[in-house]
Length: 106
Length: 179
Image (spheres, rainbow over the protein chains, first blue to last red):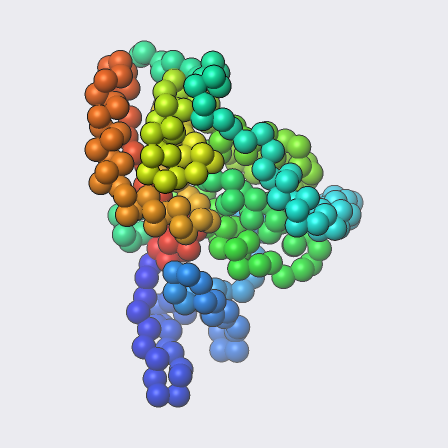
């Protein structure tokens, strides 16, 4: 859903009531205004459903483990992080085509 | 495009999206605030998971996740399927580099048309989701020429390839704008 909001003379914007209701917003709730390349985006705080569901499935021991692993992960330099996410780049060369599969015929 | 016009059945999440989704979980485990890119990716991922029947990643992304910390990576691997490369995927990727896409971007775009789900025996996806705004803009800008080149290639391939199509390419920010 995309909503157009109008900024008033004091720089305030009003969020339509249906959005407030749908998102469960209450007076005093904080929203984050983010300047991105695609314009200004408004984010509601909190954790998305998928991330939250993952976290809620972990027991206390697993959460401690996750924190421990996360610390190790965060201690890697940016270069090390990038390198680990750039492994096994896939070649586009003809010589690499032997792993390509024929389409099923049915 | 609005949420009512974007109802994909199959979506390929590029490596950048998966990386940020993974990192969002790392930040949560540390009780640290996420970055904007991480929030954007994680929120898009959560939304896409509710509307698309099949979430895909490339073989490279799957291999990287298999080497990362299991507690963060395993649930993402369980949510997604890795596409295999159908014949002519690399040929199409090489042609995409003629439109000034990098090899890495070209192969992701080529997965969008020639990525094979061996389980459901389907090929290609409705949309590729990326964190790379420049990639999405460049694809959109050159789409007419790309489509022309794609059609020219497909018409010369065996008949089973006639069903192939070009995917849409959308950024995580564009996905959130539809929520």
